[in-house]
Length: 502
Image 1 (cartoon, rainbow, N blue to C red):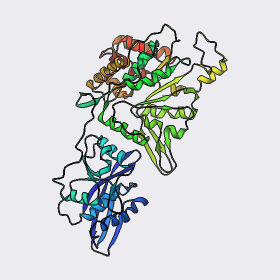
Image 2 (cartoon, rainbow, N blue to C red):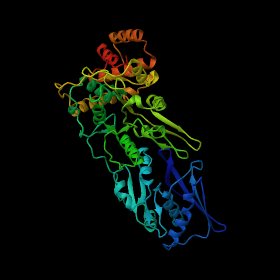
Image 3 (cartoon, one colour):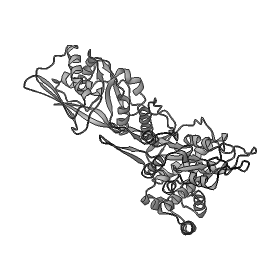
Image 4 (tube, one colour):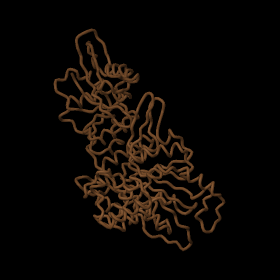
């Protein structure tokens, strides 16, 4: 028996498939087993033609190709080359050294790439499963950006056979590459960052409270809602947040690249967290993902490790807002269909922007609000208490004045976020402050006596829920980190409480 490896999709992640072959005595036949799709069954004819047109003798035996595990549905033409190779080298005595093989075959034996190749290899690299792979030569330029994998490019089936017969002396077409961005190393993990600030916080004049809240949100990955009059700078602050978010590990960069491919974009392998802006007319399927036969990823899944931005928040449908509670709380989104059940990671930073009333002038000192109390109440009631309870920071924007001046730049704010990130990792945290579990809150969110007394008084006075108490502690932890304080003090609790919804 000979064996190589390939992969197929299960949800948005690649699953390793063992391609096994046996050639036994019996009537000549060629069979595929292992829950294969119609397109993989068609690969038998491509493999036969490719072998015969390249002077390989099709062995007069009973050929069985098994794609394991048998309970995983396999799709895609990337299995062609692996199946043909196992037949071509059936007489090879030397053992194969755990090769991954990808490629679609032409009838003449040419090795081609398919549209699943890139995201599959990205996903395998992200899971640290793959070390070396035989791939189509035409895909090498694109694949060269995937770090920590050696790729062997082949143009034809013949080249792939020669490569495997001389596997011990074969040299990769692309050696393991590295991410070419500055990084620092904490707790034996590299974190990459970029110093490019295409949109700068210097453009936001005034709004010091909102900018301070944005800094806290970025440093701790805290969900935030910005409320204010039209044109006061809500969207400007939201779009600049992704420039100052924390550096990224290699796994996060690969995750982002995979999501960019699934979104139809060219992956950049750039350590800058993504931002998905969702319009209020979007359907539930486009926001959360869906599909009758194969569940596809939506905006929430694409925002994993980045920002999900909802502008004009109260105009979104009630169903969408309530369904957001799950990913905001658990960091994942589940899609159930008759034919499939898929779970996507959605560890995101939610940013919402909204007007104070339907006409937008309720907080404007220079314009008259045209809304009556019933309209304002109906507008605000579109956001339920359970939804708002999952928001860490609520900000009321200040009125715009001609005397407003710029203050902190994105570069300065990013530097503070990086310092906070390093403190978190040195402390032993695996996640951002906003994503700490109950056990981790007890371990990392240590309050001094005054802070404990202040928090107890706030719980009694404002009737805070258990979730609200934990969110106050986590926001206070981030504020203390920005002050480079190991212990949460009274002033940190007071500032955290000031961002709670009134």
